[in-house]
Image (cartoon, rainbow, N blue to C red; front, side, top):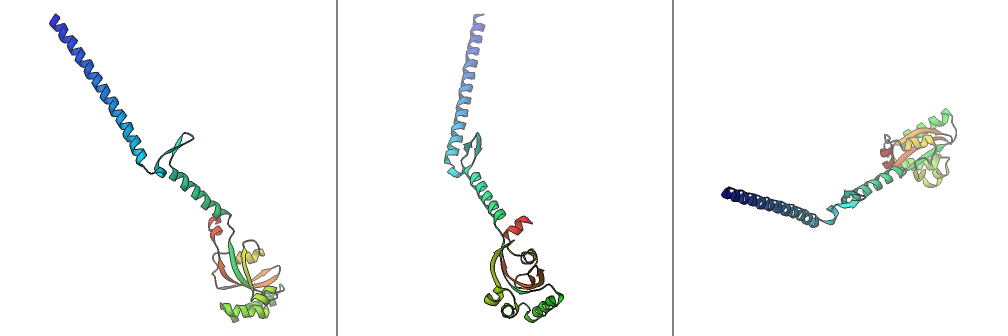
Length: 188
């Protein structure tokens, strides 16, 4: 019995030593894994490391991209569309006035020089006499609604004489020189 008991005690001792060795190796492996993960994290550039923000791990790159997107959207939604156009205005709301403008439109075609000369000759607006009908750059909503509708309609080509268009001022021929469609693209 003594031999059997000694063998049993020896077996238990070896089993417990083996279990302890396995536990130590497992703990060392876990510690090595954590150390390796920490070393990998430390070797990454700052902008790719995770930062704890209110308990949420976030990379600085994510924050930077989010802020950039917010700025771009804000500017796109708040920037007013602008245009630069010239016009020829004839006072009155009669069909005769409209017919006269249609005749002028046929004479000038889409030639900006002829449009400028016609504005100086026929327009009743002060801009026609002094600046060849040029209204300069203006924002959407700063002109009469029918005028704005024509100028800021993306389907209307630039450099093409538009009209006649009637507003409360009279009848207009409009030549759109340039248009900034940024806000319209977002709104539509």
